[in-house]
Length: 261
Image 1 (cartoon, rainbow, N blue to C red):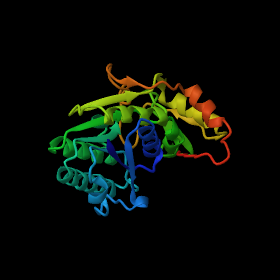
Image 2: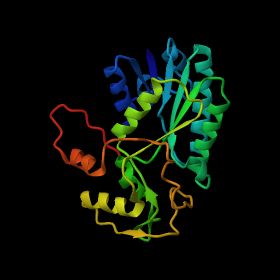
Image 3: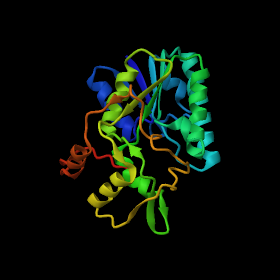
């Protein structure tokens, strides 16, 4: 089965492409680096020829309000239009647990708009809502700075390893369209401030993390359970300590190293 992965050279996309090939599928990594640009439409029709499934794990390079909305709206419209022409049977999009509750954030307003386009399209679809990735814990600290310290609300948090995200998205992509949302998450719950504090410590990052109930998350107010999934979420296997141990392990010569955050 031919599966085109939009954003196929990124953190999740590269892992997903590898897993799909290992399971006998023809996985195509599509990105501007490979001549496929979903915003301009360049190379899109050619990439989608003969595809049964399209998986969109791409992300906006610019999170400024107008730019991020333009990226997700234009990219998704172009994708869905070409999928209809190519008779693609399943559109899979990676999104975020809690998206509908985060509309104060410009980024999440753009994701809400993206999901609406998918839902209104004639292409059968599955939207995968994932919790945050372990790989982006430092990034959360970076965008939560206030007065030289990291301010985070001490809410529940259930992040997962990028490896588990890719595996879960792959299972959805090779299954039947659900025409709805599938939630995926890590196997453990933490407090957001606690886990970011632990991650910074392992990186020898001296920034102080403050548990601040009034702090925003990506520009939005959140409640105790905004960032955790519902009861029917599909859970990954990798625990935080296992992931940390893998991160600290030496990389074999010639190995592929993907880092984020």
